[in-house]
Image (tube, rainbow, N blue to C red; front, top):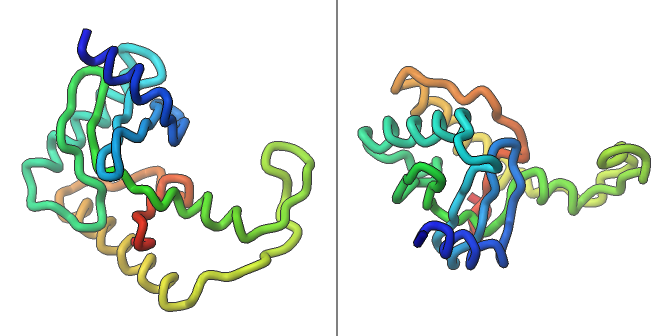
Length: 150
């Protein structure tokens, strides 16, 4: 019953609709990810991966999970949105189709920030590989940024 209350409160601050889950802002440091459908096997698998990651020293380039329950994952809130959302802000796109097509890039990110993102992504990927795992869905929409663009 308490889990439903948390989700109902959090629903007011929905921040992301993913393929398998919904992400809600709880406060400036905490987010709640819930499955789109109860009993989702992919969501349960994601929780089990966080269980494994918790057994290892933390990686500063991967958001932490603080508490996992059957239908929820309480984790770091990355309030800088995603790399995808950031890049879309600096693009002119057509109105055709889903998201349209790129017409013009109106602003580029500074090279030093792009280089830092490459290093952070490489660090996170290498850390996962050192544990014997790989992330099979690395794409801008899944690269979360904090308020300092890390």
